Length: 213
Image (cartoon, rainbow, N blue to C red):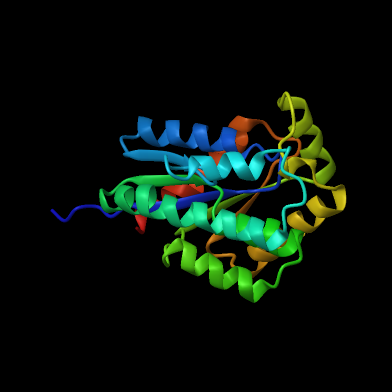
């Protein structure tokens, strides 16, 4: 019998959307069904990439040039793909990655107003051409998302200290991606729903993708 290929799934969304909680719920549901699962994240999803995450989120870091920020995220991604994602997928693992290239397009492209063509080229280079089969986009209005983020954390990181207008641009960036790629990106509305209901919807999309991998 031929070995099953891995499945690469990304989870995206604005701050406070609860995607990290959803990632854990989905990983548990898949493990209970017998699937080998790796739950990872960007930035910082490998030992060598972890220091880049610490730098990017350090709120003491002031005046970081937007293009430098973009390059740091892409450096983190390049290392993570090589060290973690490609080896896991080669073993037939279902990889759930908390943030990937869409976050770069939304946060650095739309949010920081960097050229879309530059962001797209760097995303392709940093990802080594690795694209997700499925992306779950957890969407939440900015005001509610920021309220959740403030409530659930003891302190905000450098990215979370950005302006409300910035986060509005980020959300619009995510929604534009979902509109442009409806077959890959599945939008899940978060507001007013329980984590369990959201996870059930996400799991439905995941199980469909597993049937066609």
